[in-house]
Image (cartoon, rainbow over all chains, first blue to last red; front, top):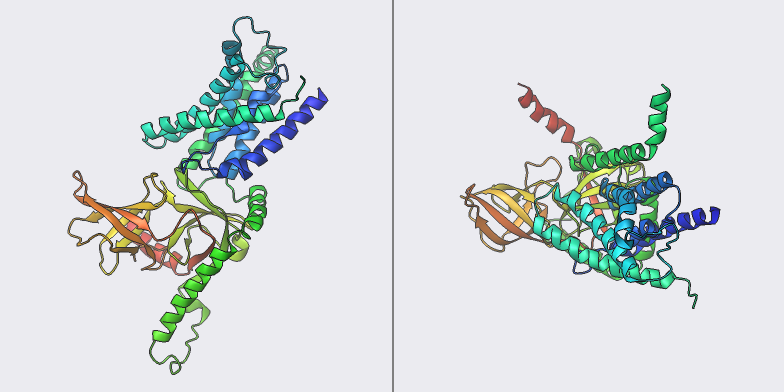
Length: 168
Length: 274
């Protein structure tokens, strides 16, 4: 239990550092930055303290807002994603979800990828929606959401492959 | 009483969620109002020092370009100096400190952004260097933005590439004023709106800061006219301006402190009160 908490704090710091140092400077096509820091929310252990999880997700978003001067956009998106994560679990892993034992990073399969895609899409959609509330650029925002979802998902899956302990 | 406590214990998870949601939405909305009330910004100690460390590494990579820019600026200044009449005969005028209207402070950009709707830059100088809110920020090529938030050691700049940015600008050598805005589409172009139809302009004309601004001195270059068309609804020109500055590559900047600003604002406000 304690080691899992430590692991998550470590992941928290590493993902923020990577996001700020590397991924915020990618600018694919001039404006696309992937947000692989959502991996923190995706990979957080399933059967742990829910309130702590909410609080950690909120802090994760707030830290990124601080670095990016974006007010509270990332914090809101992370918080909502963390709150509805159990529902996405139910949706992706079917009725017989015995998600008490699932570990996302263990094996990549279709339901796992669908879980990642849905989570990333919801997160990005919320982020761009909150910007849409301020400006009327609807088409631009949908385009950015779609492209960026694809981009972030690829980065996330690659990262999972990289850090996955090889057991075979 | 027992029931209230039970209610809170039972719903603590939902209540925590609602509390945090309220906080984050509060921050989001606060960020929309023009720069008077931002709580979360990159001018704080943690992100400021992180960006400063990153910049210390990065600046070695563009030493060459920075030198090139400095040489260009020097040569321009030398050209001005040598073309001045009787440079040796005019005694250097030492204006007393309180007569100088504009003071210039220099700083280095340690974080730049240009790909979102609201772009901010972070500088490695703050209140201790004499930087206050609402000062103008320029570099050798033109306008960069306006100081937004300051802390003791750092400051953020509301870039001209920000949909909230409004600058007073005019066409060089005329007195036709307009407002400089950004449509969030291209980091190389800004839009000058509300220029009256009477204005005589053509492609390639230079756009400079206007004299109505209390933030910038007059005639600081901004860019060249790229396209101009008349808005059907308002009968005013909308002008697309190609920036002189490459906003994706800003290194050293100068901050302009208008010492007469409070005086000017007080004067203007005295009319509003009547």
